Length: 328
Length: 254
Image 1 (cartoon, each protein chain N blue to C red):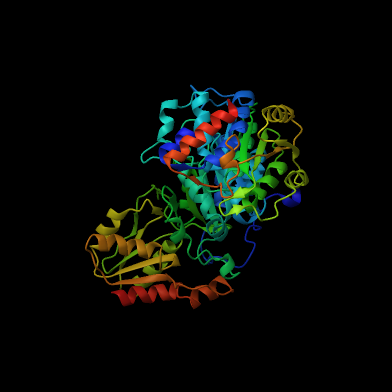
Image 2 (tube, each protein chain N blue to C red):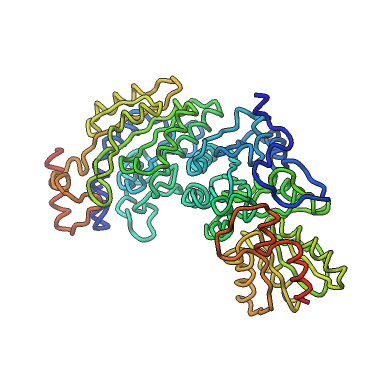
């Protein structure tokens, strides 16, 4: 058991993930919070499809071994078993990688999960471009796929502070939920008084020149970029939308109308995700604004380090700072 | 069932007639339930994985007291609570069953959940031979043995047909496959009530192994004209023919 027990530093299994240099971090905020929550709420069960170590759920397993199940490399089974458990009154937290739950188990998430209003809470590791193993492991269209499913709540937390709150919040959100999950040493980016609210956008920074709309950890990058741009004399606001569905259209409209130019940033393709949602929302209201989209092209991406890939595909910090300056 | 299909002019009547004995054996000899309290937590769960067998399910639920028999003629009609495929918003229906290969895995999850609660309730899951072509069924078969779901009984309706006609994929030997996956198995004539009741009674052992009953059934059982149809997956006939088929059923079965 000792060999297999969760220990610090062992969850960052492959490749370098997001840049944590100079940042305060928390280790495995998802799994540690779930372990605590599991003590408070005996109806919580944990499942994984052979991604326990790599999804940070092992602290829950160690705290509640009789309520933890590893179904093996079988994502369809993961969702079915979770839905069945939910039908007996459990709240089933499931983990695997975003690519596998979305591409392989889509029908099961839609029908056994969302349509059945089953309390299946999917914490999907390494969403977007967050894995150096290439296209097989990069869930660059997961938001696009999942937002196509009715009655599915979708959340893309920014940092450890928000992720911990989301772990607790989803227990009381009825039905199936998909959470893009940050694992390992997760940066603490948001202020201590930040409060996640389902379906509510949050203004993280005020600046009058450029309006940035962002989700997930790209909101942290937006804050870093806005700070750097400020030194160059450009002030940007940052509106963070951690809930992708239900989408806070009103806040996006009100925010967009304050600026001449917008930047939309996401760890996802610029097709089908946040940028598409923003364009749809604004167009439906007759609002047309020049917009720079920071995100991924409609392509499959190569293997490599996170730093290399982000620079190559134009989602790194220097590119973000340039975009803010250009957008003024 | 014949009257239900007649209202719509079509339906999955061959499968319905084929599985009717099985559902009767489950609901009136094995399953513990309270139709006045469909969400009773100690109820045994019946999971119908083949949602298109709804025609037989609705007839059974009416017989068991979940729904009023007067509602049955609305089968498949616009706005009906009894669509051609089952949805879990109808009292007595535990899962959305239309997308095949979804039932057994959910039954496994239910069996695990009941055991976590210390409940004596069991899960009985019907699935079809066609669903053995879905990989998800075998994922679930492995999981149920791994998690020692001895409170789970799967009844596998081997009627030999699927949407395109006779099953052509090599799914046999079904019972041996489940045995190799770690299940207790039995094989019965699924249109023989005595064999079904006996097999269900033998599958109550709590020996840490899930149970599979492989049922050989005849599509359209009881109505020779449907039994002889080569393409029995979906039956569409006009009113005059339904009269003849109903007469046949009454003649054959008294």
